[in-house]
Length: 120
Image 1 (spheres, rainbow, N blue to C red):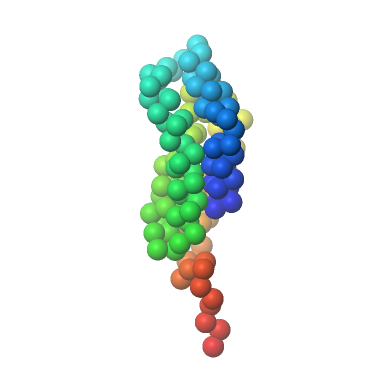
Image 2 (spheres, helix red, strand yellow; image 1 turned 180 degrees about the vertical axis):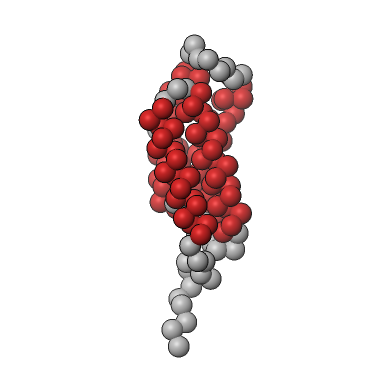
């Protein structure tokens, strides 16, 4: 999950507004469900920051459960966006990411990624 979020967030930062311009134009086309342009553009502007923030927060185990629930919310918002755009294959792919969050929630937690385990 960490690699997915950090890779996606950094690629959006270095895309020279390609991500923002592409999806902003798609949401302004003729769709069954229309959202206000300002709402879409605010969301698109926040996406890289959310991805980087969640990725970095997952490095610590302190707020693990909270960050995983934030992952669910973020992935559901992306799923909803792809649903509005009628990108059905992307909607199906998002279900795998939601399942990844479920697995992370179920797996046992450890103290920290950054400390050595006590093997004595």
